[in-house]
Length: 258
Image (cartoon, rainbow, N blue to C red; front, side, top):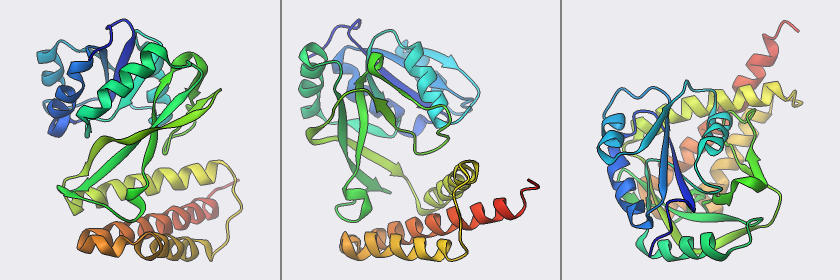
């Protein structure tokens, strides 16, 4: 089951994304949709893969997550958008639901897709990662990404957001613990900058309080311990990210000359 190429655009935001890009592209190929890749300086095989598939590529320096996604949305050929990351694989049974939305759904409605997450190949069934919905299917005429959202960007739509039934995407987020720690450093820095820029009131107890709350929620309340070592790694990493977010925000505040 497919849609016309002039009905749906599939968008990827990439940089050095060759690890799973072919598999992701294979998973969406049966949709028959137009595909756009916005790349911010890949030095691996990402652009080669896109060229092999005849995919349109726009190269653009990285301005932040929100700004890059909004640029891509505005650059797409069609109003209906399926926004994917290169480490996400569309499940076979999800295609018909996406086609139905594009063909007949109210364009004011955006759809949140549920992701099944993996850590170095192991499926994660509990903890914070088990409740992972992302708004990725929408009509661009009725919403936008905010350019000021440098991290944790979201689609802000004018209408209702519905959850598409079942698991839609397989998300192979991190191939290793080392890769997960590298992303933690990046996100903690961006989160801290965002907190600082928004002039949020900060207190010295906040790094530890947020870290403990994050660990308790993911490891105990949401049963992350049932995922073994991987569940513990996710809970500890999430807690460390929360700690560093507020610790670095306090540091920025204390060193701000204003």
